[in-house]
Amino acid sequence: MLLNLTLMLWSSVAQAYVDPKCEDVAAQGVPEGYSDQGQQDFLLNFFSLATTNSPLHAPVPYEPGFGSASVELSLIPPLSCERRLVLNYSKTEDTNKAPVFPRLRANFAFNPIGKLRPYAGIGYVPPLTVFGTRNVIVSGELGFGVPLNAGWSWGARYHATLMKTVAEIATPFNEEDEPANDLYVGSTFGLDLMAGKDFDGVEPYLALGLTDVSTVFYIGDDAVVSNNSTPFFGPTTSLGLQVKKIKHLDLAAEYYGAFANFNNESDVTGDTINPGARIHTLRTRVGYRW
Image (spheres, rainbow, N blue to C red):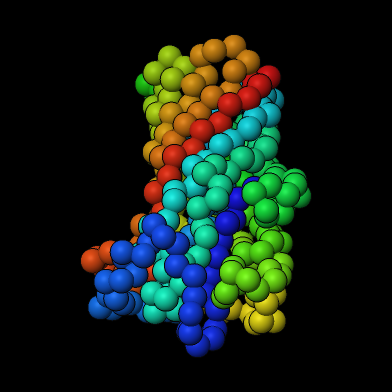
């Protein structure tokens, strides 16, 4: 389904496959500041960030006793040749197979506790093999919202996601080599502060938070566990819109971004030195509200 994640192999380079689309970039040579470890860390962090459980709802998502069942679709931004070239720009990895990431989601709002409107949510991706990868992803959230005057509201939420992918992820060094399954395990958790304003059932919202990423990657070809030396820990934001005015329709869309890794190791995208991981993507959710 997703995680067309492909990462570094720890071996010397002789002849390696380079995607024809990236041959011109590879021919320019290794850019200044390039780091194999930084490139590996970026890929390890990137695909966990792509599956974080962002809000996709306002600070007070539903009235007490109500909830929804929905399907989320998240774009997985394609990575450039500068991100796909590894081992000193001698080999490309195939990271761009899945353009979207689907997830089943369910949310429920509980009875008020004073001014607080507590809620909970779960998300799930079943272990289906799609695009050559088999994934299991489980997500959850706990939060509360506080309605204010004039349609304003604020809130806070905790979210967590655990994902596992079994697939031929780190592609063989040579095309003719027999592929072997790899194992990628990623986890994310974080806290968000939220604010929103209801305009007659159409509610824009903003969430600002901190998110932590942990990863384990076992390369089946070499029986090597790949180390993430700079696991992501940094700020994230969601800017979205939840539509509540259409009966039984649960609809939301948002921009999601992770900007700077506090566990910083400089690496390279094109001619620009960037922190060790970042992502900018769009997400949407549609389902049934009761």
